[in-house]
Image (tube, rainbow, N blue to C red):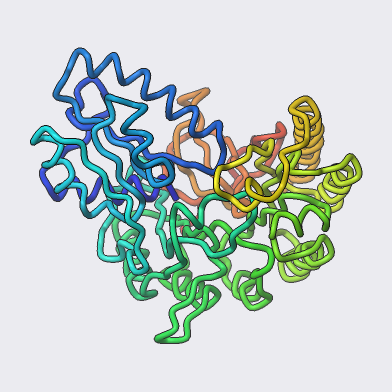
Length: 430
């Protein structure tokens, strides 16, 4: 979502005669787009601001701003603690940036962190920052109303509101005409997408976007397990260009922990959704998020997480230690009582298991042929390209005369836990 927001900001500023640069020393205006989900993300922002302090000493006229969730959460505190920060802009106030910049240029600090019940930026054509002209992101909704007990997002991004689906389909069609071949639909919980005027839910929207052209690949993130419907799975199974990959955050394998996290599903419900995915799409990859050491987590709770990981055989996972976020339900109600050493040990056990599961998953792919969308030249060799298959696995293969945007059939010959390695079997046009 932050990447998509950066593209929206880029578009707003471009329409007001600003140009981008890859060299921060050349910049007159520098924004840090922030996240507040975990404390370490906020600490990285603080560290980056320290780096910018030296730049501002050399160039006093440089304007430095903080955007996004951290801006909304800390507001005046950031202006007080980080003296070289000139403006603070929340995720619903990007349209106000030109006015805020003028305020700073007149010698004052500027702040706008007002949340909106309506803002979706649906009419803004984002500046694409990926650089390869192949992949693009489309934000389909903003906000969240799940109120997981550990999460600040509902407080920093406000209530859920969905974009007019026709604007999303038109944006996807426009990107395809420009040569883009894969789009990712983004939302805090895409399953909650709803356009009541036409009774369109997320399954309907995905069908509409996939129908733009069979050469346009469609992905989405992120799904909430409580809202993952059979209707959506049926739509995915019926379109070959909807990628067979679902990110389904579990957070914990313990029903007790899930109840405390306010996830609104049990271990059994989650397992039922995994079984449904495999029933509709046996070849579908499943990835997840896992939190180690949430409040009151016992060794038994931890072991239930490990056993669920084994059972689900995740292809990949994002894994974190719990960090208490101010003003969340967990911070107000539950003691952060799992020792850091225990959190670290449990997280390492989760990481070690996932490394093994990812390697097992990739080893099963050796000898299989996948359609891969070429994305970029490999970082390790100019003679190789990389791209992802429908299951969102990175595949490296010989470059030859191929280029980003080509569809290729690739036979997997080797792998690591993170990457498939293959050779070209056939170039495709569909």
